[in-house]
Amino acid sequence: MPGTSEQLQFDAKASREMEAAYTSPMIVTRRKNALGLLNLKPGETVLDIGTGPGYLAFEAAQQVGPSGRVLAIDTSPDMLALARRRCADRPQVEVRESDAVSLPAPSGSIDAAIAVQIYEYVSAMPAALAELHRVLRPGGRAVIVDIDWASLVWEAADRARAERIFCAWDEHLADPYLPRRLAPLLREAGFEVAKVEPYTMLNLSPEPFVVGLSKMIAHFVAGRGGVTREEAAAWVEDITALDAQGRFFYSVTCYMFFAQRV
Image 1 (cartoon, one colour):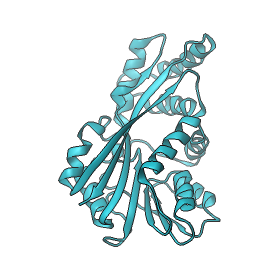
Image 2 (cartoon, rainbow, N blue to C red; image 1 turned 90 degrees about the vertical axis):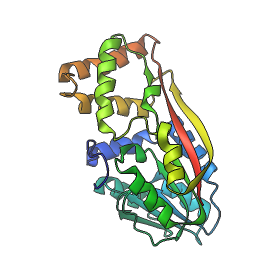
Image 3 (cartoon, rainbow, N blue to C red; image 1 turned 45 degrees about the horizontal axis):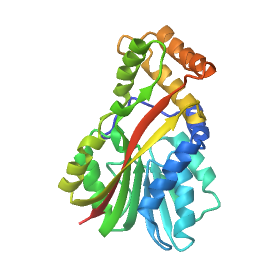
């Protein structure tokens, strides 16, 4: 995928697990908040960058109605298959394989765009934001949601081991701290940053999303940053044990940027 981090791949199994995780209440709330910030209108044309299993595209289609259009893109064929199935009865949704640095839309053709946890994977951010600026009409708006992974707080019995695991996990991203520099990048690309809202995902018990995330992290970090497969597995077991003891705690903060093309 040009201009992006290719460390994390979503095959059929990982895509199905992610699809199930996206029904978690905290992810549903984040999706609702992001779409609320975008404030879609009937008849608008929307670009969903990194649609994944297509939940956001499906909900955006409901908001723009039959006279609107949703262009949903992703780089994973397995994710795209899930999105096509989810949006099969929404003829206004077009699902295509593409990435953030080569958007498949004519210049000035998009009213609103949304990208949820996509740009933190993109290494060529100036190119990606230039593409976003190109496809949006003048005055068009975008909502970009990314996590600052330094905000992650995840209780562990062996905190030193957990810290090594989290450091290794950072390797799956192009920029694990993107929100800190996103506003100036947007302004340099020709956007006005009108609003930034934090959304903290907090759990005192392991929701499906967090369970799926722990498995994904354990699989990714094994053999990286000095983390052994056994240590990664022990960390996952530690999470289960803490939950049984009533000590589970997970928190991470997303930042929602609302920007308009100048």
